[in-house]
Image (cartoon, rainbow, N blue to C red):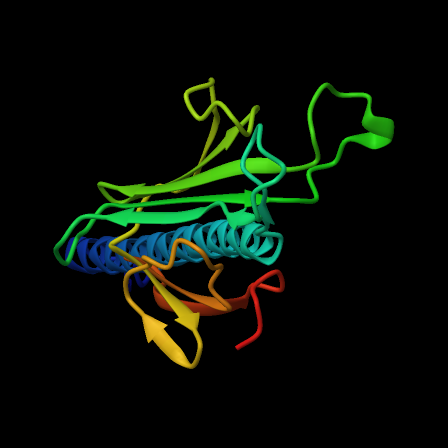
Length: 203
């Protein structure tokens, strides 16, 4: 009498199937992790791009509204621009820029201040910061500080005046006709923006 044929898997076949399944699972997990990492990098770059665009828009708005005004307490003197730049020497130089801008909203003059605003930009140790002072005549007054960009590898300014680009600003009696802004970040590389200053005297 013949024995019935036996069906099933041998131990070797079972081990091979388990190993194959494990390899497929590891491959799928690696692909899944890669997708998650790529998505995270994309989101981070998108956030950094939005942050950079917002920072440049704020800087551009301030330069566009930069103004010259008469010194406080002496209206007989001609208007002089409140525009000054200080920077240290070197590739990673600290930069401090001060200006007066108009267009600071004060509906129906309800707030005890003018529509002019004293603004200061500070670039130091890879951070770009904007400070706004509540009083034009008191630069020591408590300032409202906003961190615009936390990770900057390079920040440079150039100033256009009478057909020439200047790397340093020493023309105390004038506003620049345009300002070139160079910002470099680890994630987005170098970005350049040129902003005109409407209140500057034409060449």
